[in-house]
Length: 116
Image 1 (tube, rainbow, N blue to C red):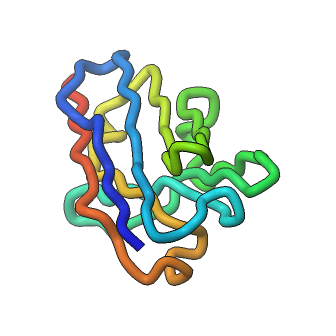
Image 2 (spheres, rainbow, N blue to C red):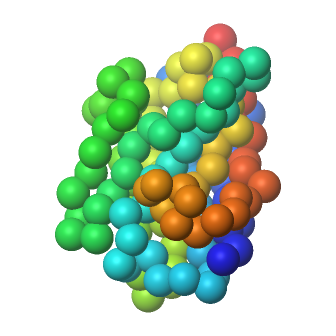
């Protein structure tokens, strides 16, 4: 399975970004897909996920109401819409299945930096 994340960048606090994750080698429609992030000096954490039926689950309370995950199965792409960004959202963002061992690999991630 290959995962390619894109869309990150430098943004001011309060700004927005839309991340994309192109998945090849596996069907995203039958897997729960999630966005993970790893901040400097911290462990990678699962932020939110979308189940095959479309239900979103949040694992980080601070992103509720600000982050939205979606999926286009025809394009085999997962998206993360991030609004009202805060400096504490600064991290490398990755997408993967939930749990991540299902795909057995990680992409390179995309860096999101939020300046205050």
